[in-house]
Image (cartoon, rainbow, N blue to C red; front, side, top):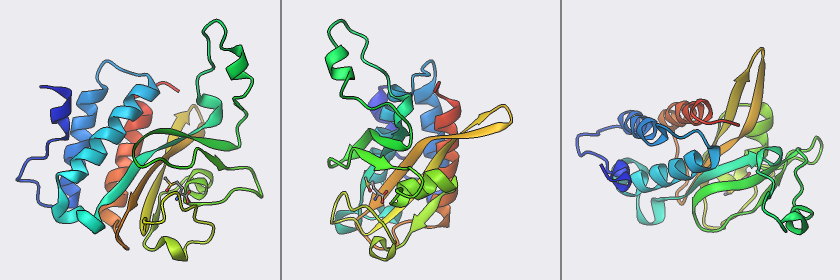
Length: 206
Ligand code: SME
């Protein structure tokens, strides 16, 4: 099957729960034989975003559509330039943690950096990352500290990416979806996307 067809959604899908279970299965297929996180997250954002576009019945289209789907990842996990002569660029890249950097996404350009430092953290992504829990925001205007990358966005859901590391649990980043309508995301989205966030983490090397 051509890779692009994984975003096709069969017409017998009737509920959001069925939709997310279907997307989960398609992602498992896409991740097969690939553990590099940038590649997996790039395909995950493309698959989720495009599957949502062809499934407007529950998620909305036009001014109710999901307008952004992507990842913010801990700055320390980004690759360092390795090619000869890249040192000058590397000097400008800050790999210290306490920040999330924009990762693979679909949608309009978004803010590149989110502060997670104690006392300075702000926004839904930073909160989900630091609290290690999925946050559903029915109305972004009512969320203290919300970072408006796109003034059109009305609601949002952010799931942390949590890596089990021996006895420890490490947050490596977040999965973020934005919607043009208020109350765009429900409990079903929370359950489905939290499972997808788990899959993304276990399918990739960090
Ligand atoms: N709204 C997010 C910022 C990221 S954008 O939505 C793509 C936040 O408050 O953290």
